[in-house]
Length: 239
Ligand code: C5P
Image (cartoon, rainbow, N blue to C red; front, side):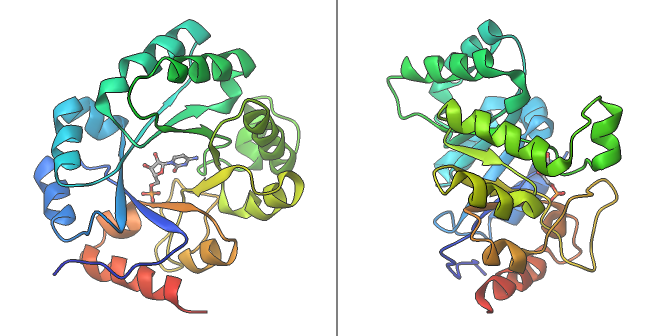
């Protein structure tokens, strides 16, 4: 069975956070690369590296390299330069790395001879709530925190932001539609994982007109991943 079932928006990105490469390959065997993109984060990149990304690209998948860069501008500049040959479709970095870091990332992309990846800025991790951000010294509301970082992303011409679903309407309201919006923390109501606090359902992501949703464990930890994915697609098709 190959899952096709095209939904215009949101586009689905599957987070492959597996220890086991074969498990990942077994799942994607059933996915149409014209419909689904794949997210490779620190786990699979550390374990299987560039070769694995190439393997997925040969199968036709667009890759979101989610390493969430956050470092001094010089390091981010060189990191972005050094991934040019990977040919990934999207990369992430933390907006709270500041203006100079964001500008350095943009400068590095300007040196590309190959197609540039979309540059997506992380506003706030979906695993954090108000208490958590207070604990790291952020004494404003989640709303204002995410808005402040999104403004910075817009100012620095990032392609988009990675944003908890519950903040999307406020961002669109205040900043318009120039930034692409990617939302992780997409979970089914009966299946919320302990470390994700700021979650929405697939149906809400459609209502909010989000461009991309990242779905991980709702599929990858399910006993029947393809059935879980199909359920999500059906939800995205309903009104
Ligand atoms: O399994 P689950 O669907 O919760 O996975 C979410 C994925 O999105 C993980 O790979 C995580 O690293 C990533 N992510 C997130 N929150 C962000 C940015 C990325 O959960 N703000």
